[in-house]
Image (cartoon, rainbow, N blue to C red):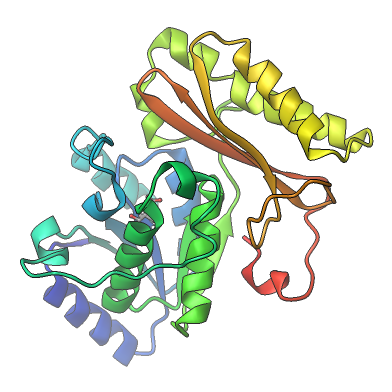
Length: 293
Ligand code: PAF
């Protein structure tokens, strides 16, 4: 397994691979790998001749009051997991190489970035879209794999790839969960034992909401109310948002149909946790088929 830190070296390696006709699969991450990342890597391994894992804690997607400095990092463990998952090359650039002095170019996916996390994390998706575009330009993947836990991120990146004709197929992989249903996330490591216990309320609330939908509830307000009531039973949980949206445009929905996205962001202690669930059948159709996460 190759480890490359330098942008130019990465581009040279990829040009060599592409010249041999090899297909490239990229799994972009911020490291601190867990079983959710293993699933992304497993998917990538099956899709490319060369599997590239990028590890880069991207300063451009963190707000000034957010956790960039304290974001968990463990490169030795990441190396081990990458080896176990059959990664061919780790690309781990330094911030100064990705954003050298004088850097001033950013890309924005305007509509898909507005709702949900876009409201509480201004500039976040601009930072994500920019770094992902840079990674695509450097690694030139045929396929790129992202998790559905960060559902809005996936929609934003699909839109980016389509709108800018990047020629990269963006693939979403189902969320991997702990045995009690909590979505795997590097930020779960911020939770104390008691907070971790409290965090079960998030998947439980989403599950209850889906039960209500399956019994015939179609009013967004009622579904949001169910989720809120369950989460707010936990004194340490602070709801940031609970929303029902169109899964492709991410526009708010008043009436729910099969395939709507129920998405939440909740703060517990130091951790900001996001999760989501597609209600009912995940139907495809029209333009949405292409950008369905
Ligand atoms: O999901 C992540 O880990 C990051 O947002 C990503 C896509 C690697 C961009 O920094």
